Structures are given as structure tokens and as C-alpha cells.
Image 1 (tube, rainbow, N blue to C red):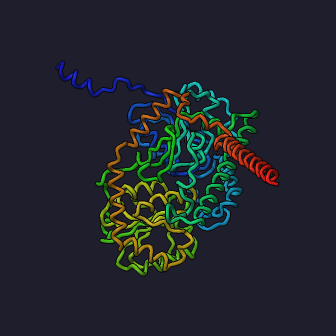
Image 2 (image 1 turned 180 degrees about the vertical axis):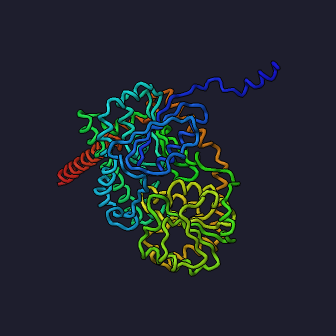
Image 3 (image 1 turned 120 degrees about the vertical axis):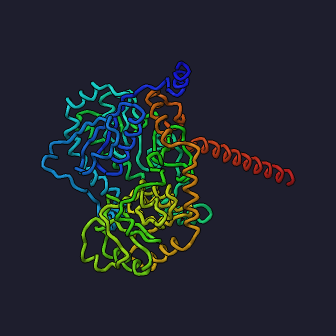
Length: 525
């Protein structure tokens, strides 16, 4: 018996301390909410005391089942203007083809205002709720985890004097925020939308990189500054600048995976955990209705939950109609969210419309040969781990990065959404992915790499959250020159001095030779 107790004690972690963790969860986009729910599950599963603070900006439905662990606690902050509002799907059809969302210059002005309309009413009430903030203070959390795309969590952590703040991002690498943690600029490492890389890149690709990098930075800066000014006004005094609050985090956890994402420099406090939430089991149950639908060659189509298929412009739909006709022996399953009888009449019997489909289980089925997707990060991760080729049609935000990131491994094609109306081009891309064996081979190789990567993303997530809670003031991971201004950071002043000395030296040599020449000439005369 004693031997059994000793043997059992070997497997008991002796230094595990349950942390009291608050996850600030702004209800603004479904993918962000789902990501935070998965982080909560991972932490609660190993025994941490996790509380989700759901800050409602829009009344999203179907959120009650996202968190699986019953030990996770919830604080639901619903402002009074929510009374009488129905839970409904909030979609953004303008991302299909509107100039206000698809032109980066115009989007710098329009997009922050669109988002501001969603979160301003909520914070106008929340920041004045002293009882709410006191209740959070009384719970004495060890750490606050909050996303960087919406800054409310950082200000809440500041107002309750949180001991540790952990920055997290549900998307891939976010260069503008990562630079606050000491990362060098990624220009040249991460391409702009549909830019070629390496030896194939031309001067136009590099100009496109600069254009995308500059206006993406301006968009994020405008969005963050707007939120910062709003909080100052609502709270009644000047709060810390948003960059300083974000930079106070010990680590910045991103949903990137170094074996999938672009190779780019990063500092030790930027932690990639992409793939921690992917279902890796190849055996997944598939509803019986799909057993009858699936053919030997099946293509599944989904454009996510924010931008819907039924809101697609008619000329884009026409491109799909023509493409379906060219592949009568292929089965297509399309996540199409409305009963559109008129559109259904234009579609052949090999196309099935589904308002929802078990995407992960379908990708695990060997009869599915291709995934046509918008390139949301969850879908990108799932198709990468499944080893299936993909036609990635990015619609907005990080989806362009995801499309380029996946296609560089040779198993997918990044496709411009404005070319959906060009049926011949769409048909050519689908045919290439279905018939060229290199795409299937490269996809399987990528899946093998991801399944055999030497680090476990889930354990990496756990380790660094526990580390950041234990050492909240650790700043040695941030490069010393990160606080320098533009001139000092790039050594412009030092290079100027070197150039000035060289110019002075050349000038003195010129004067010396000139005088020497005059002296010799005079002596000869």
C-alpha cells in the first residue's frame, strides 16, 4: 500500500496553485468570443478559478454552450439599452464589395466609426457603474486576460488595480501591437494582400506591402485612439495612454502557429499558441444525413458567420452557378443561411444548401477533397490540420494574411473575392486544386508537420499565463531600445554623425589636395 502511495505521489504536481483569473470577453464578434471561451476551458480544466466577464456590445445568440467546463463562472454585463432587443445574428454584408470596407484609405475613416457605434453605448454606462467596479475589486483576481482588438479590458484591469494583465489576440500575428512588445517591423517578412514574396516579388509587390502596412497601421491607430479618448471623456479624467496599458502586460499571446505562419522575427514575450483549440482526433461523428449526401469527390463551401453567403452580390453568385455546372460529378455542400428558392432553381442537383454544417467532421472525412473558405483563422487552422486543399477567398481583416499564410505551403490557393464573378477563372482554380496532386500532397505534409510539432500549443498557453501571473512586472523581455523614438530606434542620428564625419574628412582632403596643387604649381612658376 505504501509503495502505491509513493508511486501515485510521483504523478501529483506539487507546485500547482489555483489562480483566480478574469477573462474580459467583449461580445462583438463570434470568433473572438469563441476563442476566449476555449481559453477559459483550457485554464478551468487544469483547476484554475476562471471567471468570464461578458461585456455585451451586440446581442449575439448561441453563446451559452461555447464554454464547456461547468466550473467557469460568468459575469454578464448587459447595459439597459439591451432591454427588449432580440438575440440575432449580426452580419456585415458591406465586406463583400462596398468601397467603405474594401478600400483601405476609406476604411481608415469609416471602419472605426462603425465599430464605435457598437461599443460606445455599453461603455457609456459601464464606466460610470461604481458598484460594478467595486464588485470586481472585491474578488481580488490574480490576473486579467484581455484581447487587444478592443481595449475595454485593459482599462477595466487598470481601474480595479489588477496585479497582472495578460494581453491576448484571437487572430494571427498583429504587427502593430507586437511592436509594443519589442518586435521589429515585419515589412518584407509578412506580405501585403496578394503580394508575392522572395525572388518572385517585384517592385510593385514591395509597394503593395508598404501600402498595406501603412494603412493597416493607421486604421489600428485611429481605432485605438478613438477608444482611448472616449474612455477619458466617460471616466471624467485622463487615463493612461492605451499603448502604455497594453505594454504593461508581461506577455502577448497570439493565435499564431510558427509552423504555419510566416517566418518573422519576434521577441520572447510574444507567445504563439495557434492550434491549441483544434480538434486533432481523426475520428469524428458525422450526422447520418451527410452519409447519404457525400460523394467520392465532395467540396464544402463556407464563408463564416460574420459575412454570409446569402448576402453575396449577384455577380459573385453567378460565378458559382457556372462553376457548379462544370463539375457535375462533384458534390458541393454550401453553408447557405437562407431558404432562397429562386437561387435554388439555378443550381443543379449536385449542390446541397445547409444553414449549418459540421465543418470539422466533414474535413476529417476522406470523401471531402476541397474546402472553399473565407479564411477565418478557425477555418484556416481546421483545414491545415485536416490535410485538405483549400481555395481561400479572404473577405476582410486578418483573412488576407491567413490566405497568403496557408497558400505559401503549396496546398491551397489565395483567391481574390472580386474574381468570384469571373467564372472561367474560378473554374480553373477549382479544377487545379481537385486534379493537380501536388496540392493534396503538400496539404498532407503540412498536416503531418502540425501534428508532430515539437511544442504543444495548449501547454505553451498554460505555462505562459501562469508565468505572467507569477511575474507581472517582468520587463526584461522587452528590448531596451523599444522606448526610443523613431530617430534613436533606427540609429538615424548615429548614421548622420558617421556620414557627417566622412563628408568632413573628404572635404578636408579636397582642401588639402587643392592647396598642395596650388603650392606645387606656384613653386614651378
